Image (cartoon, rainbow, N blue to C red; front, side, top):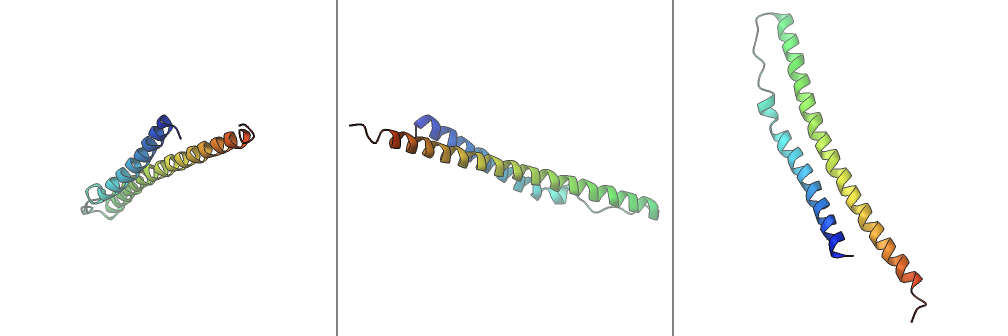
Length: 100
């Protein structure tokens, strides 16, 4: 594996880790995003506010999930690059086996 290629792989590893770390940190913000819902004095209003608060939490967790998904995709790409590099080197060695 060439030095430049290893640098790219390490960058992809770092990027994947960053996506996963940030997703974890974002999930940890949930208590700040979902404070207790205040009583508005009207059952209809309370229900509507509760539904909106639940939607905000769902969107918050959905974004964290997307960050994790991106981290998984970057790791998958890194692994694919690594396998491809090994295959190319193996093919080259097989082709050159008959040479002196």
